[in-house]
Image (cartoon, rainbow, N blue to C red; front, side, top):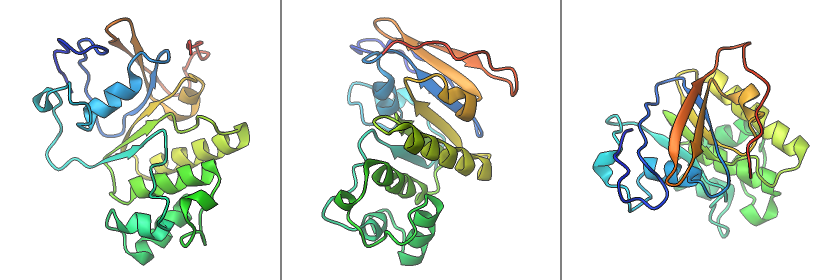
Amino acid sequence: MPWPGGGHPILGQVRATVKPGDRICLLGASGVGKTTLLNALVGLDPQVPPEAVRLQAGLRLGYLFQEHRLLPWRTLFQNLALVGANRERSAQLLAKVGLTGYGHYRPDQLSLGMARRAALARCLAVVPDVLLLDEPFASLDRPRADELRQLICGLLDRRPQMAMICVTHDARDAHQLANQLWYLSGRPAQLTRESLTAGTLSPAPKVPH
């Protein structure tokens, strides 16, 4: 996904490749451009030309935004139907994220953690090749964050070819989720990378907020 980066107010030159099975945690200070980079990957940043991001033909992307972005006037079943999941498939997906029996609930009837899990089910409905997660554990208390982290780990383990890029402020997430760390820093932001080998991950560095 290389692009020259010239003229972008936040991102500098970024050159990186995501392969099947890559589990990447993207770290950096607040405002450095982590969300901007995710948005560029999925074509949501108008300042990044489409030809600058090279996606494999037919590649399916699932994007879990910071906000769940479920339609509040529709039930979970209805929200999943909007991405092509029928009732049976929707029930299966909700069960995968621990929401069995909640298909008839609207998002405003759920806790933040539950709504985020429902949004994750919506991501999974497209059977993504790459799962993009933008601070999925933000604003969750520790038990709910641990629960969601374990859920994502299990999903990745069951689909080892699925890649993941997870924006986070907490490098400790890498101990459970990542086999690579990406760091954004500077103005405009530059990307550096670190590959991780199972069992050799050093203590989590502190990342400024």
